[in-house]
Structure formats: structure tokens, C-alpha cells
Image (cartoon, rainbow, N blue to C red; front, side, top):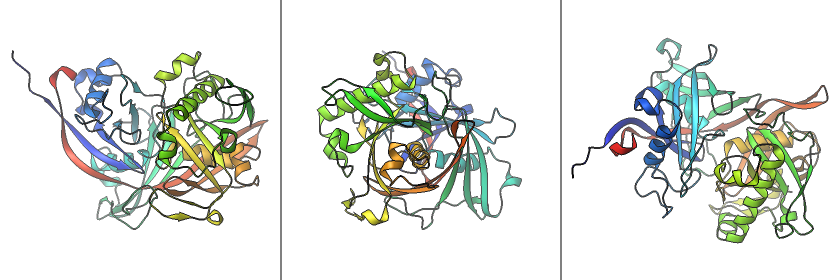
Length: 400
């Protein structure tokens, strides 16, 4: 029996925020993977090493966590007033699907630097020193992101002294602006609050929540997110990963509640659809500030944060915070009457500092009540990014 050699595809392995993934230029992909469909999905799965029943990604570039089983495809922009198009894929670890339904806010920080270093930006637009603003069209959710990328000697500056909890080493700061981040990309849901309510009461099975009722804030900002009060589920809001991720019953409970919230938000038409839509919506618990010790051993004082948030991603408690969920947190915190705002004290605010398992994060949002509806014009946060490896990823010939 003869076997075909592996195909070599130019790729860059990058960290963005607290995530990392494999970045591609659209034109470098095999022709049949340059369009959306099964061929692209199978290629991306093979690059990452999914589906892997061992949940290790030993035979691929993934890291077998929701933060590291990611791919990005960059192309020249289809929009006349944007620099590039950015498409994000969340690869399921042990299941056979790729979720293209949302964005990755963390990897958004790496998109601008990748575009600059890979020929998408005219050289005459790149300053010798300073900050270059890249206007990104986020193709998954049809939204604009502006990345402010530091430039030194005509090249992307990657090193610096900006520290981000959840990332071991400091790097250069990249500020991200998420413009009009309310998610209305192609679902039956619409507007910042899809039900029109700041707080909804969900009907849930009594085996998930005693009494069969659960208060939740359902919001479409950055990424569709379901916020619930930590105490209503028996948590303090200070939990680290092992407390929840080592508890199969807790994981099943969160997934059941997430599916119910997704149905209420109009993101799915039947609860069974949630299993193939794991990336969105997210579900998170919120609580008022308390002292706790982060996963790195850092003491987080209640006086230094506005609230606590713990978020689930791809069926597991995230080790820090998804960037898109941070946008949802900042937006909800800015609107009085949401569960997030109430956990933060209930006052008007344009910025919020929240505690997550790895430490703290600041995010700002501008929200206004216009014509009887809440609207958010912008959310802002800082991240960092750097290239980990670049060259060619090899894929067996039967997957390209």
C-alpha cells in the first residue's frame, strides 16, 4: 500500500490574550478549504488534532483546552473601509465539529499583528515608531474591531512590560475596541437584550435548580452570554478550575442551564441543538467582591475589584476570562439593573474591574438608553499577543 506525503501549509502559531491558536492566510489554504464547508472543517480539525477521544491533542497543534483548540483565517477585507477580514474557528476537543458561531476576543489581539507581519497592510502605512490602528471585520459576528498595535522600528513590537493575569510573562500592550458589539449576526435573537428584559426568570428542571426557577441576565455583547447569580447555584464566585471541572455533575448542570438559556435567547430552536453549538452562548456566574487566592497563588483583595465572575467555555470553567465574555461583562456592568451590575454594587459605571480564576481584568463600555432600548457603542480592553512559532504545519494528505 502506498501513502501520500503530508501537505505543508504556511501557518503561524500565536498567543493572543490568554488563548493561543493556529493562524492562516486564506490564500495559503488548499483550494477546497478556502471556502466554508466540510473540507475546511476537516482540515482545521486535523491541524488541531481533533476529534481526540483521549482529549490530549497529542497528534496536532491544539492544547486540549477551550483556550488552545482554536484556528484563525485572515484575508484581505471584503469591506472597503476595513483592513482585513478575520474568521475564527473553535475546534471541539473530543467531538466531531467546528463551531464558527462566535468570536474569540483574546485571539482578536493577535489579528492585527498577524496582518501587519503577513503583508495585509501597505508598508507605507506602517510608522517607523508609534501605534498603528488596524480596522478588522470580524466575519463570524459581522462586527468591527479596532486593534491599536505598537510599532518599533517599522515592525510589530511584541515585548514589553504589560502584565495580563492568566499569562505568565509580560508583553507589549494592545488595546482593542469592539465597536457596536451587540451580537445580531444571523440568529433569531436581536438587540442587546434578546428578550427585552434586564433580568429573566428561566424555567428549569428542579434537578438543576431547586424550585425550578433561575434568574438570569441574557445579553448579546461581544458574545451571547448568560449571567446567573453564583449563590443561586450554591457557589461563592471565588471557585478555581478544579472545583468545577473535576465535578461531572456540576459540568452537566451548567451545560443544561446553558442550553435552556440559548433557547430563551433564540440562538437555538430545540435544546438538542446546543450540543453542536458549544462556543455560544457562554454561561457565567457573578458575585459581589470577596478576597480570594488566584490559581497562580496571587492574593486578590475585595477592595481592588468590583465583582467576581467565573465563566464556562466549551463545557469547562475557563482558566481566566474569554475576551468576548469580558466585553459582555463590561457592557452588562454599565447597565443598571442587570445581575452583573447588581453584583458590582448597582451604581452607574463606565469601567469595571472583575476577579477571575487567574486574577483581575479591567474592561470599559459605553452604554446608552435610546428610543426605549439599551445600546452599547463601544467596549474597550487591553490584551497582548506574540508569535510563538511560524513556518508550515503538516497535514496528512487525506485531510486537505
